[in-house]
Length: 273
Image (cartoon, rainbow, N blue to C red; front, side, top):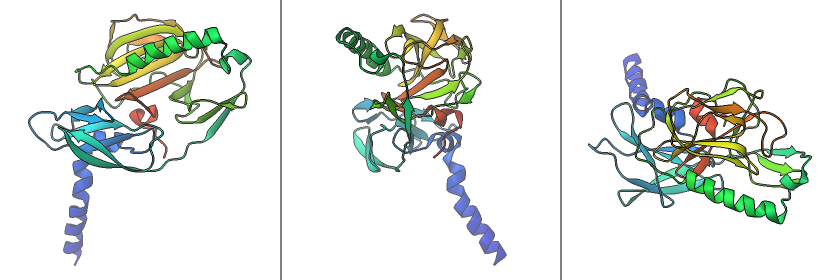
């Protein structure tokens, strides 16, 4: 009997061992999370799309291909489908609740912008939307990200936000409580695709890590890069500040996959269900 139990334990353990490091790190299939979908071990990477956007595909542990899929924050729990070489492949999204955050701003224009502000905001939104939708063929240098700064995690991803009592878009990134001037380091290698000073985000830098995996850093006090620069993992892109709609110095870091903003905590091993 002990031998049978030992054999059964081994059999049950095989799927977990076969899953691979990246799957264990990244597979958090919740609204605003990441779904890792196994694609087999063919000789070439399959072409994958989700909600009419191309999807990041990498080979895990030198063996099987996996799709790393950003799940929109408004996705209901239940079955979702990818297109893998034109055929549907299902994956399941689990429920997740996000808390509320109430913020008081002295500048009421940052809550209710005037007509001129709205024109600027629409123009800036178009620029940033284009940057998020970029899909380059480059393979990301790493998917287990370095933290861009060393500091306490403050506002988490997905919070329902109320500014001066008025509900606005949920928190699309992860905040680090660090002082003005702290250097911000690229969590993975990439190309700088957008640098700007925006109404809500303040001084902002976008870095394309490859295949639709994008980092956005905002509220900066200064830039250390320009559009077209190639930054290595750990390279400095700018310095922490409090520009734009911010109540104090901190780093706001967005991570986007297939044009979906997802919880950056997943990529640094700090995700909390």
